[in-house]
Length: 305
Image (cartoon, helix red, strand yellow):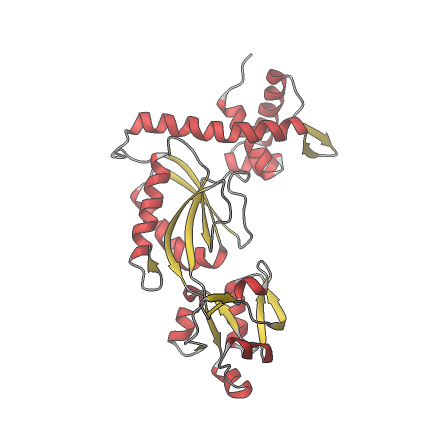
């Protein structure tokens, strides 16, 4: 008896998702098929991969080590076979699947329509898209591509800048009429700011002053985990917010928000595509990244690369 690619794919799906039920839904198979594949795989390799207790499974140390080696190996195998089947010019129809992770607000506001056009152009290609503002581990969680707003912060990943944005400080007209308009970054200490729970305030409220970046003291009682929610709190007059331009562009255009500290330069925030290093690079992944770069380069809110 020998192991096969179906068993490896099933094992990696269970490792990524944590349950047989979730892996069955991902792979569109019954739970009994998933369990049998895992059991057969354990028999072939001669090692227990999961501890089973009261319907719950926990990966063993052997499973963790094996998944770390198998995931990139499987990715390289898929890339190699796709390149042979389709040719390096990518002229044939794209097929297979791509898993994509992106931040919630950027994804729902701007990425979805671009992915929809790409999916329509390649009807044989399956896309799995996960929107979450938490920073996902692209390799461990089984994604082919991640979109990062801000620096990639992971030297183990390949990266390409798609475009760039610049955060702006905003508030509602009613708030500014009531509390006054800050004239310098130091004035922010006198105003409540609305925080973002995934990033410390010192990394968000940054300005260029005297040739270097500074992080003025800020404080506030409201902290949220989503950019659109922060924007909406600012619209309601609950304080100042510093947000990417793509989140507040519409609210600025219709007057719900007003930009402040316009003469003070904030940090440039790249919007990056990141992916695990795989050689050869799958045609479908390369074409998607090229497509995203071309689409965002002509966006009216995002600076070209």
